[in-house]
Length: 156
Image (cartoon, rainbow, N blue to C red; front, side):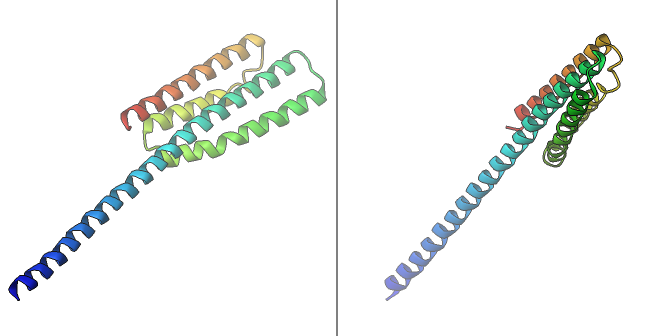
């Protein structure tokens, strides 16, 4: 009888230990999956912002260049509308980046990239000034990508 009671207790303890280990393993797997999803979301925010910044920089270049060469009002209006669309496209990934990536260096570099790109509008006083503003915006873009790469390298 004692042997039977010990066997039942051993079976119950084995079940409890096995269940606990399975529960812990499932929790680890869930945390790993959640961490991977956050990493993918962060990477998506960075790449979308970098792409949107490039698109807006290109749109502002075309708009400034057209204005400097004396394009007609219809062409300027079309290019202005396109630049408004590309500017609006910067908002979502910039907000996502601020919410998802906790690194202040990445935030600072992203903001500097966006501001340098916006500054191209005011620089369209000559082709030289527009080119210099575009070069500044490209350099800010590269610094943003470098800051994001450093963040991802440190947090893999």
